[in-house]
Amino acid sequence: MFIDREEELKALEERWKSKKAEFMVLYGRRRVGKTELINKLIEGKRGIRLLGRTESEKNHLDRFSADLAAFFKDDVLKSSPFQNWDAFFAYLAEKTKEEKIIIAIDEFPYFVDASASLPSILQDHWDKTLRHSRLYLILCGSSITMMLEKILGSKSPLYGRRTGQLKIEPMDFSNSRKFFRKYALKDCVYAYAILGGTPGYLMEFEDQKGILENVQEKFLRKDRFLFQDAEFLLKEELKEPKFYFSILRAIAIGKTRIGDVINETGLQKGVVSKYLSVLIDLDLVKREVPVTEKQRHKSRKGIYLLKDYFFRFWFNFIFPHIEEIEKRHTDPLLRRIAQNLDPYTSFIFEDICRDWLWNLRLFEYEKVGKWWQNEDEIDIVAINGKEKKILFAECKWQDDVDATELLARLQEKKSRVEWNASQRTEYYALFARTFKTKIRQENVFLFELKDYPARA
Image 1: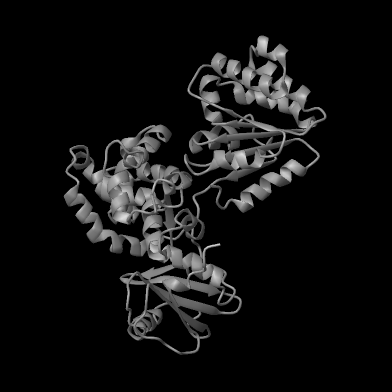
Image 2: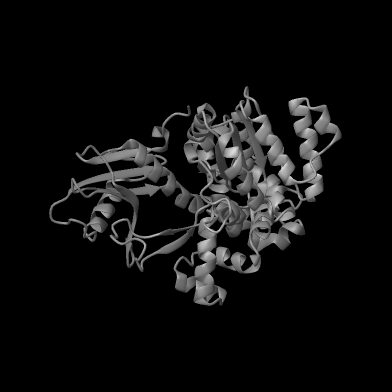
C-alpha cells in the first residue's frame, strides 16, 4: 500500500526526465517510507536499489558486484567483482554514458562507516566523470546526524555536488488516516495521537481491533517493536542517549521551558541547549513561540514540545513503566492509558485543527500558531498583517460542547492579544467532536469532527 508522497515523488520524477546527471539526497528517520518511495520511483524505469548493511567494505563491493552483474547481465563483473570504490564508480560512469539509469544507494551511512574515505572518492568521480554522464544517483540514509554531516554539511567533500535533496518527514493526519479504512474518524485521531505519521508505525495497528486492544498488543509486550523502537532509534542515532532520554522525558511531562528542563534534568544550560538543537534536527522536538511575536528566533517566550507523537506517547506512557511491561504487570498501566488518552489526545487535536484551518482558508493567513501570555492561552491564532485580520480559535476534544460558552471565554481572552488591537477585523473558529449548541453569527465558524474533509 503506497500512500501520499505525491510531492516527493513528483520531485524525483522531474529528475528522471532531465537530460543531465542528477545527484539526489534523501534522508529521514527510520520507518518513514524512504525505501518505499525509491521503489515506487524505480517502478517501470531502468534502475536498481543497492542496500547498505553493517558489514565490511569488501562485503559491500562483492554484493554490489553481484547485484549490478545481474542487473546489467554482465558475466565479466559476476566473475571479477569490484576491488575498490574507484572501480565501482568508474563502472557506473561507463554504463551511464548514454543511458539514464537510477542507482539508489540505500542506507549510505553504513558504507561510510565501513569506508570513511567514500565521500571523497565519490566527489572525485562526480567532478571528473559522473556529472557528465546520465547517471541518476540517489543517496539515502536514516541516520540524520550522519547525513547532515557527511553529505549535506559544508565540511563534507560532497557539499555543493548534489542537484537536490528531500527530507522525508512523517505524514500529516489527513494522509495517516488512510491507513485505517475500518476506523471511525474519532479512532483515526486516537491512532494518529499514539503513532504519529510514521508509516512503519501506522502499519502496526490493526483497524479491526480497538485502539486500546492495539495498544495492549503492540506496546505493552516486550517482544513488540513498538515497545522498544523509540529507545533503539535514539541509541543508534545519538552518542550520549541517557542525557537525551532525560531531556525528552522532562519535556513529555510538561517541562517545556529551558529553565524547567535544566532544573528537571540537572544538566547545565549549555548542554541542554546543544542537545535540544540536535533533537530539533531529528524532528523529535520543536520550539514554539507565540504567533504574534515579531522576532521569533530571539523571543524569550519560546517553549519546547515533543514534535513526534509516537515519541510523545512513548515517553508519557511507556518509558516510565518499562519494568512493569517487562514483568507483564500491564493491566494497571492499560487502565491508566485509558483514563488519560483523551487529555493526551486533546493536544494533538489542536495540531490537527491547525492544519485543518490552513486548508480552510477563511482568509489569507500569513501565520498560524498558538498564543500565550502569562496564564492566558489561545489554542490557535491566525493573522494577516497586511489586511489586519486576525482569527482566534479554540479546540475541544469533547462531545456536546456548549459553543456559546466556549465563544464567550475565547472573546474574553482575545482582548489581551495586543496585535493591532484598535484596527483589526476579528474572526472566531470553534472546533469540537460535537457541539450541543450552535451559533449563527457573522465571523464565527463552528467545525465538528464530522466536518473534517472526507478521506480521498
